[in-house]
Each structure stands twice: as structure tokens, then as C-alpha cells.
Amino acid sequence: MECSADAPAALVDLPGWEHVHPRIPDTPQRRKLAGQRTIREVVFGAKDGVLTTMGVTIGLGAATDNHATVIISGLLALLSGALSMGVGEFQGAKSEREVVQAAIEQESSEMRDHPAEEFAEQVAYYKLKGFSSEEAHIIVRRLVQNPDIYLYEMMRDEYGVDPREAEASDVRPAIAMSMAYACGSILPILPYFFAWNPLQSLLGSVGLAMVGLFCVGYFAGTMGSKNPAARGAEVLLYGSIVFAISFTAGRLIPPLFGHAPISLGG
Image 1 (cartoon, rainbow, N blue to C red):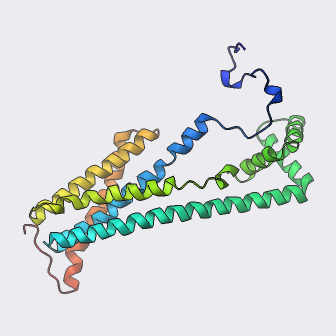
Image 2: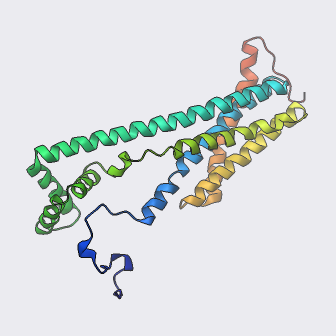
Image 3: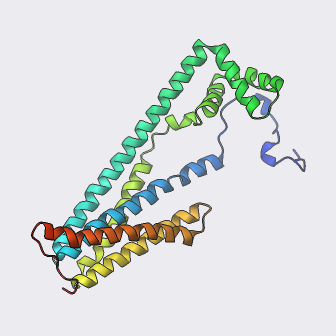
């Protein structure tokens, strides 16, 4: 079928469309966006891994010249943090799905027990979108004939959510966050595996961490509409503030417990 000049190909009726069972639309674009949204877990996990472990390595690196102490503490922070982030993401996503499911059940109950009120409510939503009263009534009367789509439209308009979010039980976001955290955490620890003096190790740790933070921000920028370099600089700025606070704590807190901080020169 030829497409008119003012109608995108995706919106032109295809042969046999009359026999297609009504269903909630699903598109490659929606699935692609759903996959890209995993960037939240990757960025959050990697950034938190760098910052948390950097706090440990800077704090200990400023307070002691024992590389083994810094490495062991850093690896423990990596392990516990990665597991915690993964489990936390999985449990958090599960709780979010349960909240959405509860809202779906509530809306389904209202549509079943108070059909006239829900009908009028949906008509009002379509009128808010610019449809005339007659057009809104026509649309909603058609929706009533397809309960699944009717519920989808009600959830989208009233709650602003896609009911399909309650069906997603993918563990990949949790794994992505856990792995990203581990990758970010290892950066500040790496310099302490070499026989460098305390100052060199500390500077190397800070340098790798800053590079990692910039790369995380840059990656996030490429997935969004913001300038990647500006996004990388933004993440690096916040990380630098955390670095400064952690370093200061490592220098000031040990004396409170009778431990004099080691000079950065060794």
C-alpha cells in the first residue's frame, strides 16, 4: 500500500488490519528504550563503586602506609558493596512491581464495581487531551469492548504508569548494577598492588578513580541528550568533592583515636 505524503508509513493501515486482535501496542522503539534505561543501573553502580571504594582507599591511604591493609579493606568493600547493590536493586525492583500490581488490582476493582464512574473518568481524560465530548465517548465505548486495553489506558492516564512494568521480572538490571559496582570499585585499589610509596599509590588511586568517573559520565552523556564531555565533567566534579572529604577524614579522624596520620611522603 502506498503511503500518503502526510502519513508516516507506521501509521498507514496494512492489508488485513481488520482481523488483527486488539492489543496493547508494542514497538521495537519501546523495547530499545527499555534496554537503554538499564543505563541507570550501570551508571549508578559504577559511580557508587568508584566513590565508595575511593573513600576507603583515600581514608586508609592517608592514615597508613600499609598497602595490604588498603587492598584488603578495598576488596572487602568491593565484594560487600557489589552484592549489596545487586540484591538491593533486585529487591527494590520487586517492591516497585508489587506497588504497580497493587495499583492495577485497585483500578481493576474500581472498573468492575463502578463502571459508570470509571467510564466518565476516562472520558474526562480524553477531553483534557483535546477531544470533543462526542469523540471521547466514542473512544471510551470502544475501549470498554477491550478490557485489557481499557485498563492499560486507565493506568496510563490516572497513574502515569505502564501496567507492563508489573510483569517485568528481569534480573539483568540487578546483575548490571552489581557488575558495574565491582568494575568501578577495582579502579581505586589497583595502584596499591604495586610497590609504590604511599604518595604514588594515593595519587594513582585518585587518578584512576577520576578517569573512571569521567568515563561513567561520558557514557551516560552518549545515551542521553547532554554533551558527553559536560556530563563527564559533572560526574567528575561531584566525585572530586567526595575525594576531598574522604581525604580530610583520613587525615583528621585517626588522631582522635591516638593514631598519627602518616605523612604523604612515606
